[in-house]
Amino acid sequence: MKYDCIVIGSGAGGLTVAFGLAGAGKKILLIEKSNVGGECTWSGCVPSKAFINLSKNQMPIEIALEEVRKVIKNIAGKEDPIVLKEKGIDYIKGIGKFIKEDSIEVNEEIYTGDKIVIATGSSPFIPPIKGLENIDYLTNSNFFIQKTIPKKLVMIGGGVISLELSFALKRFGIDVTIYEIGEKLVPVEDEEISEFYKNKLRKEGIELYLNCGNIELKQEGDKVQVITENKVEEFDKIFISTGRVPNINGLDLEKTGVSYSKRGINVNENMLTDNKNIYAIGDVVGPYRFSHMAGYNGEIVVRNILFPYIKKKADYRSIPWTIFTNPEFSRMGINEREAMELKENIKIYKLLGKDNERSIISLEDDFYLKVICDKKFRVIGACCIGDRAGEIIGLLQFMNSQNLKFYKLMESIQAYPTYIDSLRKLSKLAYVDHLKELVKI
Ligand SMILES: Cc1cc2nc3c(=O)[nH]c(=O)nc-3n(C[C@H](O)[C@H](O)[C@H](O)COP(=O)(O)OP(=O)(O)OC[C@H]3O[C@@H](n4cnc5c(N)ncnc54)[C@H](O)[C@@H]3O)c2cc1C
Image (cartoon, rainbow, N blue to C red; front, top):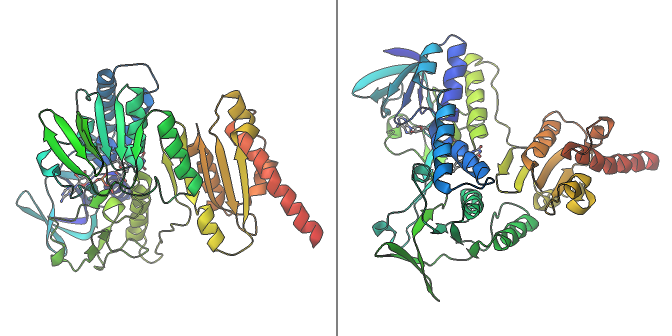
């Protein structure tokens, strides 16, 4: 059977391509080995954010996990096989693999596509820790199908998934300890953000051990022991959260000329692989493993397949992301460290909770906002700690994408006391700097 495009994987990336191309009248085949919706819907963004949100209510963890599964069902219903059929997308459940560059085998049938999009996502990276092979551990893949979570949990890894779930678990009354291999948390962020998380964990009663590259694990009855140089500590259950690996195995890419490394499939700025008819998008490519990036990559592919003569390029200069802890942390574009390396007339504007009326009103001590502008006052980076950090950063990302100068925000009217109004007030500082520069001229 011949298609205009075959999409392997139905996560945020694959669905974007399938819906986009089918909407433009193309004949599409979507292949998915598990549940339509992928990681984000079933074991990533959706359940983790629902779980975090429910942790703010006083409820037993068993009920919260049930509620999480209802949320998954609700979201999954918007992209299930019935919806795919309504949109004119052919769907097959099964494992897809290349048999030649334009042909995919699934369930012992062969399908051919003018274009093929690899959107197979990523899986939890399982580190080679001594003893782990004998232990029944949790990852995000099986966490949300648990009926309950035992009282004392150890997180191996201190990345985003670990931080988000640890704070929530603690609120559900679970005793959490984090063992992190690195010397600091969230190392890609500025120093004050790593420090914030370190202090916040301790404040919430979550034990944190850094520099833990050399641990051993042992099952002792129904307990798991974490053995370090200095001590042995016992836990009920272990959660592995040590990063992601791209889902490349089993695709038989060797038959296509598509190159890859252990970090992911190699693509150019048009999301095209080394083969001119095969694209790859989302987590299987990286390096920004977020749902919105898989969707963004997918939109680029849709554009480039539909309009091959005006190729759209991926632009990674101002990507936003949010860590959904309480409070949230969100960031876009470059950080202060990177800004300093640019060696141009960078301007940095900061707002602390004690100077932000909305934070004072909300008793929100941790609030922190930093906006980085280039010499022309265009926003090139920002980060925020706060209740609505993701939304604040969203506005700054929009300003960046439209090349708007930060002080332009001052000309808008915002409701008091919203966070956006706090941001507007911060932009006055940029306005004053702008006036000073004008006067100098
Ligand atoms: C706990 C957790 C929380 C997260 N929270 C957020 C968040 O808040 N915000 C955010 O933006 N991102 C978040 N992410 C990241 C987000 O889930 C991923 O970036 C996103 O799902 C990637 O989409 P994708 O389409 O590339 O891949 P996936 O969603 O992984 O989809 C790939 C699909 O391909 C299928 N597949 C694989 N191989 C084959 C094959 N050979 N044949 C057929 N099918 C195949 C898989 O079964 C899967 O369904 C989170 C991730 C985790 C783990």
